[in-house]
Image (cartoon, rainbow, N blue to C red; front, side):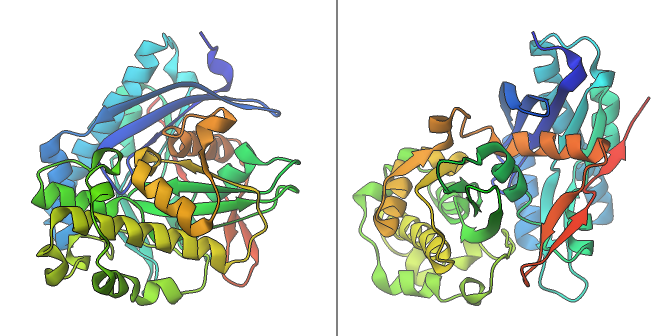
Length: 367
């Protein structure tokens, strides 16, 4: 078993809000190692409550307070499970970074903000760990958009003197990082990942998702509807940029699209996601040798085939580099927590190619 002295925990629930992923990592000056990974499902009634809050952009203050505590409790349960499983007897020496559950992300309005819930006080008390949370709003205060937060971690974990790489994270929303051989990087959101596909499966087919993209694989892309999906002004915005389910949710799909055969709808949504990811990467004219995918979308074989087609190259997984494709984003929050408690600044990318230093995250300690 690993010792506690250099251990950090990262826990996150992304835009899919179907599970809390937890990574236990050890960090030294030369190495970041994944010691253990665990994921627990968010109960359907709680997941539905999160979905309704996001999609309707409406909740009472009382219900918000209760939901904040519920999410804090599910985070604490997931974190405690990995502590117990790895026989970590002195959690007060462990620092945990939590993403919280994003319920609103508004990067483009005058008083821009990003709201995550999941009470860090509850998490700290129930797990016994020091908790770092609320990473995004200092990022915004420094001139960023609060997302994506993972590019700097991608660069730290995946830099290679042998090749420049694209690290593509496909969650509910997709983002990628271009990591160059000298360690410099560029990262941005690209648009939807699993968000629209999962929303359709959940609302219409009573399925959590299209496993392996097997339904979509049998369908035919509806070109007219694909053009509508691609017409949103978000795709014309300059990168780096961010987005969320405020835009890419069930309501994004036209009534006409929803009248079509389920196989064709999912084929069209897969193609939409694949094109927007590929276009975003190609638009920046990066020089790179390989694309490595992580996140839940790494399991969608049909989606990966279509991305491969549009980029005209094979697609690999981060597991090919020795890191579980499902663990990367939760690992990132453990790493961000490590930086915060050790007063190491992170980098905020601005649209003018400048970088601002920032200490990201607020620290909560119950002892």
